[in-house]
Image (cartoon, rainbow over all chains, first blue to last red; front, side, top):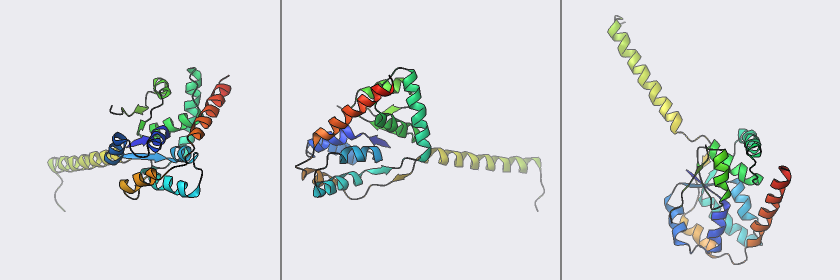
Amino acid sequence: MILVDSCVLIDFTRSKAADAKLSHLFASLPVGVCGICRSELLAGTRSKPERFRLEVFLNRFDQIAIDEPVWDQVGDNLAALRRAGVNVPFPDVALATVAIFGDLELWTRDAHFAQVQRVLPALSLFAEPP
Amino acid sequence: MPELTLESLAARVEVLEQRVAEQTTAAMDKPKVLIRPGVGTWEAAFEAIRGIVDYDFDAAHAQNACDWKEAEERNR
């Protein structure tokens, strides 16, 4: 299972679903989203009809639940990153932790996740085909 | 009741070991988080995105900038 980061979803929204590579990958891979990705995409909503459209899109992905024990692990990972001198936004640490906890590959286009992976080697990053 | 012999016991142990191995593999294959399958079709999902004309693309940037600022302050 691949956990898709909101940056990929936002890029696809920006392309108005015309990005053929992403359409193909979404439809052919086991892709899922979690609450963090959902809220980050919905943050750009300006009207109810468009919010509904985003929901239709998001609901097509498998929905990955964030279990209670994940949050303690987020804290542990924040501490490990801090010790290593790596500054990363909280939602990104939470997302990385959801991926590690669920044994999921994380599909992101944000370069700083490579830094996170150096500190948290259990994080598996999906290699997006060119 | 069949007579217990060393061979029959060894055979039973072998069967039990096989069952344990199967169940262990099944448990390892099971996702560690609850995953609810997506609903609808991809065509409908893409059509929904095609109809979006007024999305605020600055929202993600603004939130991101705020999150980075918070991360820097947290680690100060």
